[in-house]
View: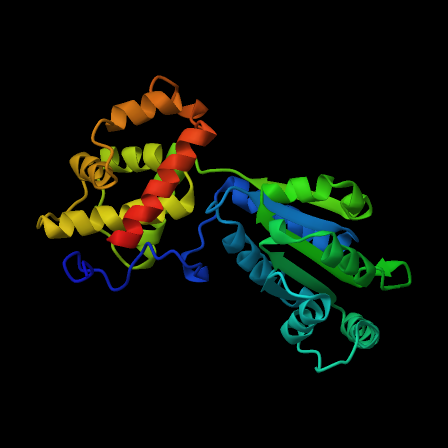
Length: 311
C-alpha cells in the first residue's frame, strides 16, 4: 500500500525468509562458519536454537548456500506425522524414489542413496525445522538413520533447528543417546542496538532505497520495542511505514513509533517506560544486548501479532 508513496520497488520488511535480504553480523558469520566446519569435517549432529522470530530458519537457509555443492543439503519442517510419512518427507526432499511399503524398505533405499551421494564426494545433510516439536519416536529413528558409515565416516548429518524448548527435548532421558551425538550447538541471540540499525538499513539498501526512511531516534526506539528480534523489527517497521503513509509523511520519526504503541493499546506506556522496564535506559551502548524480562516481552509480542492481524 505504501510502496509507491515511499518510492519503494518492493516491501523491505516481508516476514518470509528471502536469501536476497540476508544480513550477517559477526555473530551470524561465526555461527555459519562453525556449522560449515562441522558439516564438512565432523560426524555429529548439530543444533541451532533460539527464541521465536530470531532468524533460525533464515540462518539454516543461508547455510545451504554457504556449504554449496560440498554437501547434498535439504530442509524440511517437522510435522507430527507417523513414522512412515516422516520418512516419505525425507525421501521426497532428497529426491529418493517413492513409495516404499515399510520402514525396512526405506532404510534399504536410504542406505543406497547415502553411499551413492558419498561416492560423488558429498555428505547428505538433513535440516529439520521446528525441531522442538520432535518426540522420542522420530528422534530414535533419526539416530538409526545416522549410523550409516563408510571407512569410519558417517554419511548422514542432521541439523536440528528449533526454539529453545528443543533443549528440553534433548535433556529427556529417552534422548540421551541422541544428545551425546550433538557435536555443535549454536544459540542465536537478539541483535544489539547497532546491529538493529545496520539490519534495517541493509534491508532498505537491498530494495534500492538510498534515502533516509527512519530517523536515528526512531530506529533506536524500534530496537527498544523489538529487543533486537528480527521478526518483530519487520512487523514494527512495516506498520510504522504504514502510519507515516496514512499521515502523508515521508519519514518515520520517534512520534510515529509512539503512535504504533498506541495502536497496540498501550496508552499508559511510553518509549521511555519500555527502556526503563528493559533495564536499558541508562546502560552504555556497548552493554546493550537486547535482553528483557521474558514474561513482559512475551505479552508485548502477542500484542504485536494481534495488531498485525487486525491491520
